[in-house]
Length: 106
Image 1 (tube, rainbow, N blue to C red):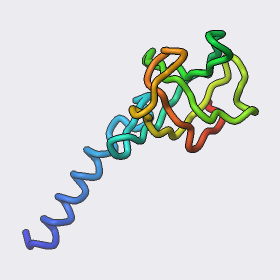
Image 2 (image 1 turned 180 degrees about the vertical axis):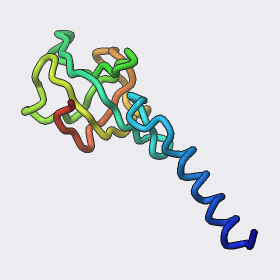
Image 3 (image 1 turned 90 degrees about the horizontal axis):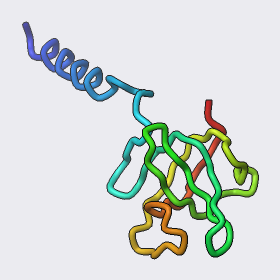
Image 4 (image 1 turned 90 degrees about the vertical axis):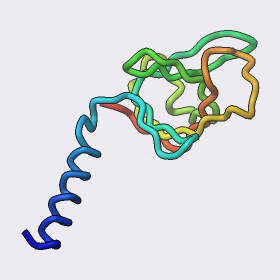
């Protein structure tokens, strides 16, 4: 085989490995602090009202900057969040996740 064919096959193998299982995970990462979450919004009354997302796998993240339209108990969502390890939590539900983008889930 010539080099172009080998390079093409290698690239196709990388793409297929990199995309295998897409849609199967509830937490995907894009860099050290950015996560793509799929789960359900919940609220808790601790020192005020705290909002969180519980992923399909059961991991809980405390949400920061959740838009009002998504402050609905039990709403399924998909969100892009930035982990905020530099901030303490009053609610102590889980790691603080600053909402960058959010949409209603499936």
